[in-house]
Image (cartoon, rainbow, N blue to C red; front, top):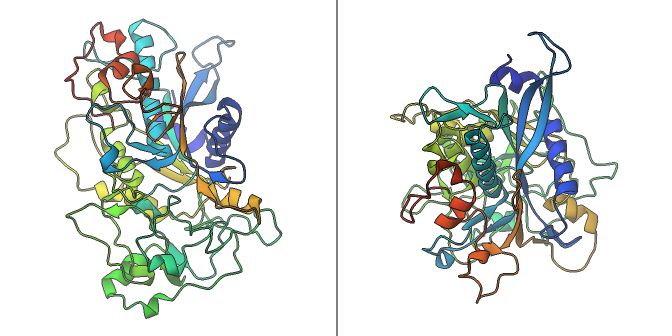
Length: 466
């Protein structure tokens, strides 16, 4: 039987994962909750199950196997509520970024699969563990996490090279010198500063692949060409210290000139070390914990880079489900769609920062997750929509809705806005129907798949699901 590592290396490519997710988004998700054409954009994330399945038509122990790939959870969204809108009742979604929605939907899928296992269904992804009453994943499958864009936070701090091929707009210097301006797009400039070129035009270049790198792994930044607009300042004029210069240039290809860095809207955790704010490549300090930006109201939600790093140590299952599992549920790989990207920044943000984590319970540890980039662009990404809308009137804005989808038979789809199911009125907020399937409320968690335990968790049960 081929185990997880072999599956990771040989049974899928980054473009296959991206294409599968984009097709699922286009065919399985309804129009409701998707961006308004030529006016809105969004981000997409998903979890894909990769499994080896033996050909039942052939007898004997050496039956040929085939690889199946299935999207088991999906999320879209760009929003995060501010601290003042958080609720002690736990009936609101604090963080509606696509990566977080996809992971929460994945937890619903895991709940359902554990219910199947407890009911002795053969098609469950779980099998009995060595300890009585606990379960573990089947050995012939793994999970790949996909995101159409680089996660906000530390992974988005990417060196900007001179004459870089870019299909997305770099941050303008005006915005770099005005950190009070928020950007939901993580890496992209405000649309009124620069415009992306038509991605279908002759000047747009294909992704450049580093020699010797497997299919799907892009250059340090894999972009299309941008010929207009001022070139950002060289780092030579930024008064960088030797240490700051080494940090930035260490992420760039050998001999390449770093002229700036892409900026993330995520803010450093209060009370900890902060960014220098210097112009140019020394603007950010890398490796720090950050919280998502808010529109005037600071949020309490950690950046997606920090959450992915945490999942890579503690697993994606959450504290509730861990009571019934023998081992955590880890992601085997992370695939990023076509966007501003740095392999070094991704590795630093997801795994490098966690190498000194110790004193973990048995079964937990820092995972060597495989990180790749696809060359396929998401149809509703900010850059794609900007290129299509040309000179259309009005501003390009992020979609206010978030879609969650899970491979479960009961209510697989949910569309939320401002943390509540779309269409919820102020009077209806306290109603049970207004609580999203991914909510922290105990009754929502019980309904999501805890019936297999034979008991219902009390209201005071610690629901550390976010």
